[in-house]
Length: 144
Image (tube, rainbow, N blue to C red; front, side, top):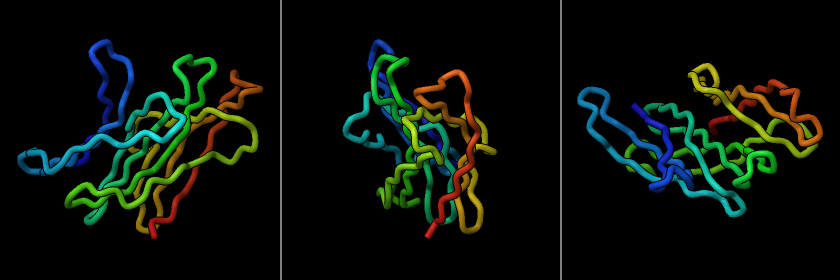
């Protein structure tokens, strides 16, 4: 089982994305780790994860600033080795929009799902010019 989450400091600020892999039977922790935040971001949340026989995939949502009205939320997919949690890749996932945007992916397995050859992410984005009208998107990432 993989568990995506967020760790914060004492006052609930400065979110850092975390990921754990648990044994399915006894729920013992196989490994756990904080996922690095890219330069230029303020905080991160690991919101989804799925596991295959050999890899774990996490969706991370990064905020660029502390002020929500000025911040962008950017998406990343991180692929990790299932045995030891080593990061294999960390790739930005951008919705199909040319404008400045802020994206989000709601909870639930239908929003981050693993197929045989693709990972699918379903969410919404808003542009800086039109924050009141979210647009739905679905992105597919090849697993190779």
